[in-house]
Picture 1: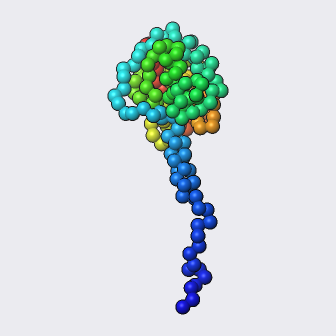
Picture 2: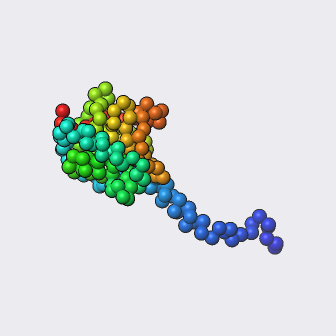
Picture 3: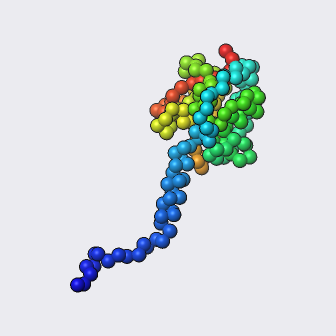
Length: 178
């Protein structure tokens, strides 16, 4: 009996396609994790109650990092930052605060603030991945905040009234004493 032409088994035209697909899936997973940070889940520390006089130093330190490259898991200027790494670095450098490298943990240790009471140096949180506190930035004033937004990007200033951030806005918190 002759084999049917459509029943022939052809060799895979791309021998390494499974490895390429596995790599693509891994990269997609890292991209989706964005800047939630590599920190493990543990109880949040108490709000550090930073002296409000240090707000300007926090903002100036953050601005000095503009255009630093994005790097998932990054928390040092020479290596690059993800969003929680940027916040951890800025508050550590400017105010001596020890923060976790995880947006959810930082959100839990910050004190909630009504959006109308936002001040420079406060933290803004977003739900960008379908889960709470998956992105964050440092509020600068005048509706602007600084953040490390995504792979391939750089630390930059965005606006809260940007349609993307309006849609994903979640909350405001502060690490400063009131």
